[in-house]
Every structure is written in structure tokens, then in C-alpha cells.
Image (cartoon, rainbow, N blue to C red; front, side, top):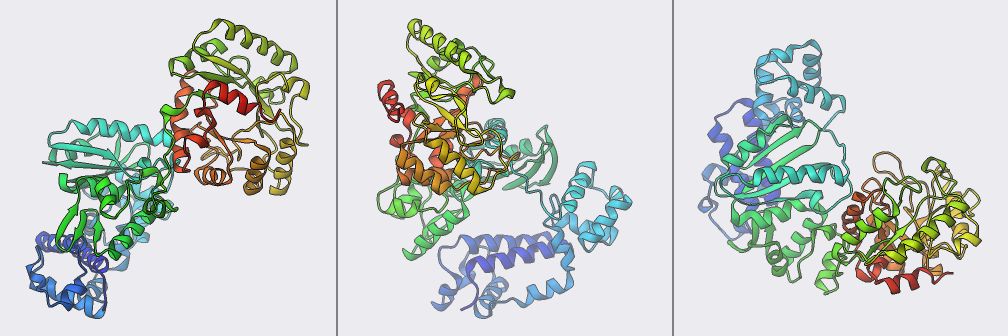
Length: 574
């Protein structure tokens, strides 16, 4: 047999777009779109129904003409009508649909008014100022098109989670009070807590979507409205962030949220599993035959497939489905389980709060301990501490520990790993610390062999405790330096060295795959904030998200331990 339901739906949607470009009757265009949705959401393949002699015209939105086209695609894998439309409509016009803001109607307008048939034609119209004469193409739209054409496609810029996440939360807060809204959630890679989402996906269930769509498309910081409709609208913010809102019924909410949370690879694996069980899963529900059997919650989707709920952070098709089926899903780390922070700076180096201020802020957050880890003197740009100032700070911490209640300060330092693999302070000073946080802060351009050898040499020192931000990356600013992480992780396991997961949103270093590698090797992780102010202590949530994506559990993270246990663990290499 020929085409699958997905392929038939794709063909019908393309027909709808081509007819729209031609300026066809809107009811005819809508008929193909409605049919595509019916086919895509149907639990059985059209090919199976035809083999069983099923009358397709009994399906909602499928008449005799569309039934015949479905049959043609199933039998031949092709559709003559679509071929004819493609020949009539210039291929360049269809390509224009990939540009932001250009739906079929705008493409039709460009073709009819300016004779535009391709991206090259559009570029010429932009350069000559002709587009400014066309109704519906304002300055924002023209600027967006010029940018897209200059990049030969859609903007693929990615954003840090701390940049894009709060924007998504503000939009949801704005939309949540719209009349008719039942539930609204952020979906996509933000919900999966990826470190670098590229856009915002929002799903809402509504009894009436008119007000929420009106609010969404008239938000103050919009650069352009890409599309606007009763079930889906898309906008581009002035920041360049693309935001997509989908409005569905309450019955469709959980499965639509699941579908648009992704990842694509996770969803494909689930659909394959469902198919083997005689089920069909898509954004509209889980179906057995014609009956929707799971839609009330995401947990119900997984339960129907014989497994417990899989949290969004794990949905990357990296073994989470197999683990769920075998009852081996990790019990992931939670923010509430963190008992202290093991990387914090003060006014002694490049922090903006005093030791006491940092201690009190940590106590307010319910922590039992806070490590003071100011830079050592090699990092002059951070006003690093020499031996005398380190010893002075040790005395200050001892004095504060004698007067503060409910919080214990740990004596540490962020010690530079020098060119030759030695540490930036002598052992006679390092031994006075509770532990060290060691890091590479310069000479990032070494080869992988040289950089790895440098770090391995440093790890020979018995006072090397935690390897801080191990790859040196800064998201969007600096690539990780070359490093053999497998060797580093293996050495950490052998020498009982701890890896840091740095919670600074521009670092999130180590990344989730390295977290998983470390966990599998038995290497412990310190999820720390690298705080340079009292507010930075709250960045722990970003490190926790990254750790959860890396399958980290309570026992994998050392700062879930109580004070006595953590001190014993940190000093075990001395």
C-alpha cells in the first residue's frame, strides 16, 4: 500500500496552501485543512480502513471527492491533483511560505500586485522599495523579511534559559486571565529545561479562544504578527524571539501539551510503542480504534502505554522510555533537597556582598552551610587573593562561625589551575582550607591533549577537591575548550574528585550529557551557583534543571548531604 495518514495529511495541507496562494474559495481551502486534521487524528491508517472495505465518507469532513483522493494516495502513493497544482503555482511562491510572516494570502498578494514568483523577486522588491507600496506590508514586516532573506531562511538564534524563560512566564501570566481560558502552560524546549531554547511554545485550553488570541497578538512588545487564527497564532517579539500560541479544547489539552513539549525523538518513540500495542497517539489523544482512551493528563498517556509518568526534562529519547518500562526511572534531584552551596564569592574578590551578607542570605534560603570560594591571586581581573589575604579570610570565617547561628561557613577558594598543572596556592595554605574549587581561567586555546594533561596533572594534588565549570564554556559567547572528558571523568572516579555543575545560566557547565556520563561512572556532582551576590544564590534552580536533564538523583549530588557528612566527604582526599 502507498501513503500513510501523515503523508496524506501533508498532501492535503500543501493543497490547501497552494489553493490559498491561487486565491481559491476559502471554504474549499478549509475543507482540505479540516480533512488533513481528521486524517492525522484518526487512530487507524486509511490504508487499513480501505482494506477492510470501510466507507471513508462516513468520517467527519471527508466527502466523496476527498475520499477518492485518499484512495488514490493509498493505492499509488501520489496525487494527480497535487502534481497539477504544483505545476500551476510557481515553486518559488511555495518557498516563500517558509519566510516569517508570509502566509498563503500574503504570498498571493505579492504575486498578484508585484508579480513576485520567488525569493529573488522578493529581494528585488525590497531593494527597490516596491514592497512599501503594498497594503499589509508595514515597516516591521519589511524589516523581518529583509532579515530572513539576508540569512537565507528563518532566524535560528538561540537564547539562554534565563533570558527566554522569564519572557514566556510573563506572557503566560498576561494571557492566563483571558476570558474562556481553562489552563495554560509553557511547552517546548523551555518546559524540557534545555539550556538554549530558540523559541517559546504556549498551549492553552479554552472554552472560547477569541480573547486570548486578541491579547496575544496585540501585546506591547510585538515586532510582527506572523499569523493569527482561532486555534493558532504566532508573533515575533522586538527581541527577535518567536512565540507560538495554540488554543485547544480541554479534552485536547494534555495531549497537545505533551506533543508540543517534545522532544520530537521522544514522541516518535512513544508513537512507535503505541502502534505495536494497537494504539495511536497524536496531539489529540491516545486512541484505540475510534475511541479516545487517554486525554485527561500526561500521566494517563504514559499509563496507557504501560509506564509511569516521564518528566519533561527526561524526554530526549536517551533511554528514558526503556527505563520507564523496566521500572528504573531515576528519582530526580529537587531544589528542596539542596542543603548548601559550595561555590560563592564575596567582596574579598569579585563579589558584591560581604561574607556575612552571603551567610545570612544562605540561611534565609534554609541552607545549613555555604562555602566561601573567592578567587586566588593569579586571576588578577577578579582581584584574586594571595596567601596573606587567604589566611586573613580564614580567620574572618572562623570568627563569623563563632557568632552566626543556623549557618556554617566552609573555608575554600576558587584556585587557578596554572599552565604547568600546578595550583595557584602552595599546599601549606591549601591544607588549611576545608576543600578547594579548582578551575581553568586562561590558556583556553590548548589542544585537547595539552589541556587534558594540564588538568590531570592538577588532579594529582591531594588538595584538589572539586573541578569547577569543567569545560570553560560561556553560552553564546565562548565555546568549550578542547578536552577529553571521558578521561577526565574516569580520573575523577579513580581519585574521588567531584565535578561541579555550575548553575550560572551562561555556563550550565557541565552539560546534561556530561552529568549522565559522570553519574554512570560513579562520580559525584556539586551543583553550585558560583554566586557573586546574594541574589545569585537563587540561580540554583538552573543547575537543578540541568542536573535533572542529566538523570541526577539525590545521592549523585553531594550538597544534598548534611553538614557533618559533607565536611567528611570533602576532606577525604587530604
